[in-house]
Image (cartoon, rainbow, N blue to C red):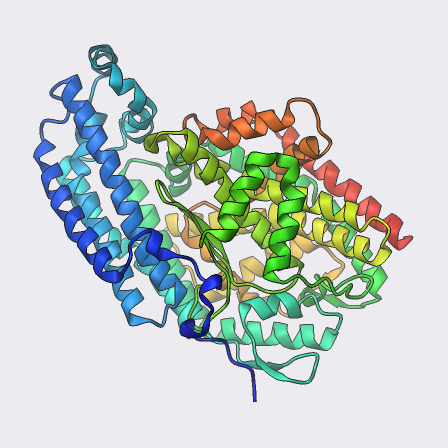
Length: 602
């Protein structure tokens, strides 16, 4: 009989996050919702008077920031209850309640955008003189309102659009329920001859197995699951993209990409530079895949062979507790204050670690200002689990340091910089592990392989995702229909182009695009690629103890959203408006491939 996933009730409390730090119970959550609705109703009194005077504007933004903090806590609690077990109707109910409240909030406060955005620059400058406390909210006002002049609709139209938020979010919710709740991969015979349920955590283990038949059977089950639902996933993604396009068109952006990158203060040229530069360096990935084929002796070599160990499986297994100890040791290079933050994370109920029935797949970090960060994992006792812990802890520590330094209105760091802290941790962990196993050929080869594949899987693969996403958006903006066949063929062509001639695709129509949740985050994925390239340089400087590198990085970690993302990164010594940071990162990749060839004597 196959081993089944634990139910939520069967998971030990020490492997669950402590949501009581947010609210002691669901009843307390309900009380918080009532209190929030009352304050939201009172906030409506400002309508038509937001910019009557400097003092009035100050009172408005103070209350707006407080409301935002209350809603963040409510929204995450509900989301966390749902993500813990998507089959639990109570969690589903709370999540729906939070989404409705968010939509209600957007509708109620939509007058803020209309009134503040219309404030003349000269009047705002005078307000700053009349009410000096407004200077604490200057970036908040400029980023969220004043820079949007030309992209705000009349109040009635903004309110109508805000009321539609729940509809616009429907496609992402359907994807989550379909992918994380309803879709099953089935059962599979593992390396020990035992039938087990194939889960996302087990996939990460089986695809790195030395047993090629197990990798093949795993791949076939994944493909079967996605193929069966590919038309539903295509309609879901198409609906989401159509909604995103509509919202950006309504706000007078020529394209969805222009609007989404504008909101993050990123020039579109950064996106195009990334795609072009990665294409210029694809030969590195092709050479690595050819090396894999030569070492493994696989002709043909399929996509399910991409992660097989080159010198066998070194059996690097780490329990959750062992991984926490390794991360603490590996990241002590970042200083005692950083280690203290990690210890608080590991012992304070910040992490939900274990896989269970209905739990949302993957991992993420979410910060609740004034409480602490929260991390969701689906733990597996392997190197992937270890690196995921380091990755999500990077997010948590950026939140931890930012919240201790910045006021709430400046604490929310931009999406573009969010992945730098997480991937810096990954790079530092790799350096630590390579040094620790320097005399072990098998492990060193494995770690170099993981490093190379992590780089390719983050910089190259996420750029592939970015190309796929942008092509899909352009097709919708041309009033064409996204079908499963079109998406599968487009994705298959990109996979072939990026992997190179050494890798054979089992099927030209590749439906695995359907399992990427980040396509519902609107031009998000490219930032994984830019962040990994940036962090590769930063981590190398810190590990080599380059003078000033650690101080620069700490300044960055504490800065939150107090400046535009490009300026924040410049403070850390990297200019993202130039392709040089990408060229430098690929030089590191080429160096690691050369090191691997030396270890393998190739």
